[in-house]
Image (cartoon, rainbow, N blue to C red):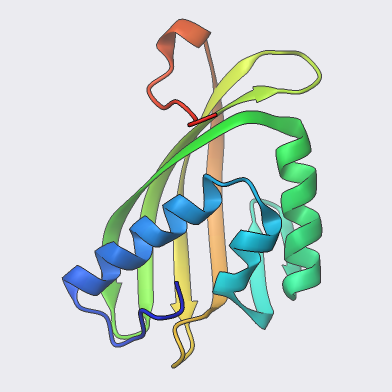
Length: 139
């Protein structure tokens, strides 16, 4: 993902979003974390943290709880070294087995090398029936 560097055009911004979607759908923290600077700053809902180690730990916790995770990201806006996306993902709760669709927005800021130095995410979870799923993981 870092091979796509700012300033972004519509084409490169869409490619960056697609690369992020593909990486997150691996559900592998080691793959995902490569897209972020060593000191990347994150806000994920009500959690604030910094650095690749914290990102890895967050992702491990996330995917231990959010089973069968499948994500769609869509470019919303871009300029210079920033991209905003809207996303939806579906997952099954590890404790209850209930299905959810999460709707949200992310704002990304990149360094000159194309690594994300800041990620700001807001989201809401909506309970769904398994029959209402729109996204399927490739497992």
